Image (cartoon, rainbow, N blue to C red; front, top):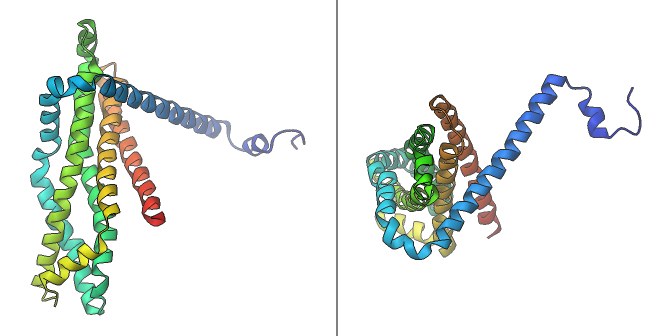
Length: 280
């Protein structure tokens, strides 16, 4: 039916409906353009950061502190609730189950692998995304649509330096600090729930198993992963807030795209670190 010299990919694609091919092509092109735009936006942000590194402590320290408090301190009540819930749902039940089957010796390995490496950092990043990342898109998108960003540029003020850079640094620090707080709270509340279930495990045994399973690499990768989560969320949300909406009615759709892409990016980063853990 098809000429033999025609490429196989074209011959296979010829059997698909034209509308489906158009949709796939449009989605693929959109993905390429989005990745290109995000990469360029991140490079510009990093360039501004390193080019004006000496001025950061003097000019942007209050802004970075405000963004860190916004993405960190204001989320402490919610993180506390999640820590208690995580201790009950995951840690307490795991301790109880391992005790029933006589496998409490694997407690430290399970806790470090499941909670410290994976669940804790990812849950914290998603919480920051839903509470602070969405606000970034709405605020910056509204400012862009109302012409405030263009007014800043006309006055010689760099929007990347004053609007994006504090959010990137502040969110990276906040995700790291909140993750540490969440993990400590979850591990403590998990033992409390296990104690209430009369699990024969002393606090000393619980702590010693956790410390024996933790390595220096775990602390280093935990800090690196959480900071990358914060940078990724801030970059994507700021990009869609500043580079996308030109009208107020476009802000909701930009917010949806930012949340979706941030979620996918965080999962991909987590998968990359999972490979690093397996190879280490």
